[in-house]
Image: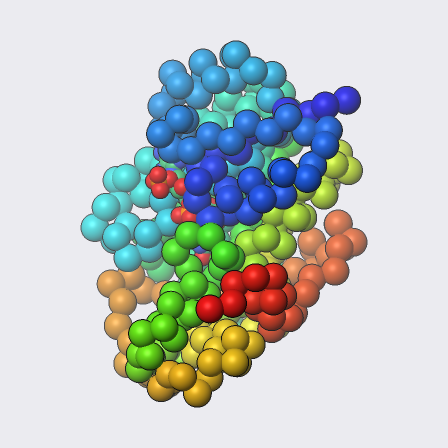
Amino acid sequence: MIKTVLVTGASGQLGKCFQKLAVREEGIDWLFMDSSELDITSNRDLNNFFNRKGIDYCINCAAYTNVEKAESDQEKAFEINAEAVRNLAKICKKNHTTLIHFSTDYVFDGTSKIPYSETDHTNPINVYGASKLKGENYIKDVLTNYFIFRTSWLYSEFGHNFFITILNKVEEKATLNITTAQTGTPTNANHLAQLVLMLIKEKSTNYGLYHFSNSGETTWYGFANEILKVSGKLNNVQLNKDNSYKTIAARPTYSALDNNKLLEAFKTPLKSWKNAVRELYKSGIQN
Ligand SMILES: NC(=O)c1ccc[n+]([C@@H]2O[C@H](COP(=O)([O-])OP(=O)(O)OC[C@H]3O[C@@H](n4cnc5c(N)ncnc54)[C@H](OP(=O)(O)O)[C@@H]3O)[C@@H](O)[C@H]2O)c1
């Protein structure tokens, strides 16, 4: 039977990864809606949309993701990442729709020395992390048939992300000062989209909260170094370690995620972050 899958925030980075996958997927009726077509903060628009279409899965890629701006734009961040998500969860409940949602490693304060598991204490240290955590909690309150994937340091061939930024800097022959003050795991957004597609196709009912990242950990400096290495451009730029990098929003110094629950539930191997970087570069982003 054909399933109907709504993707909100469809023109963002992760939304575009789903659009790429959808091209070769049969058996799914995809509804890709960007922010101008379906604003998740509009209760009326969401209700109208769900009333018109029978939706089996809602993949919510819509989010306020500007971590720096969120510090001075708190109201908007909470409106999109928390209040709208609560409303979306309620509409999913009314329509018997499974909600698939994404959250972040920034729900943690970074004081751990080992990867965070789903049961570890959350304590966000910036507005973005706090707004995303509130969104998670609303979903858990309202729904039973949900999947929440906390992920970290997403990159892909789409949108604004660290991977693309570094490759663009190569063209400018720039000097790059990249921080070593944060450790986490870069995650290829295409891999996350592939996992979600798999669970829809398998009609998984392993609902709940999961951590999803590529395996291993590094710093932003290590990530930049690897991108330059796989692209053969390490000698084209001056790459420096920067220990004094300042941001408006506080960032957890350590935020690697423990993927064991996910590995157990979905029996799917996770690529190492280095292999994932190489795979994306080889797939065609070759400056
Ligand atoms: N990027 C990361 O490093 C990272 C890390 C951890 C977790 N995550 C989570 O992963 C998910 C996907 O992130 P991403 O990298 O794909 O983010 P993204 O590229 O910023 O995409 C977010 C999308 O949401 C849309 N949007 C914003 N407000 C909306 C609204 N009111 N109604 C409908 N759409 C709206 C944006 O549209 P406009 O551009 O038109 O506003 C944008 O297309 C998010 O939940 C994010 O919190 C991301």
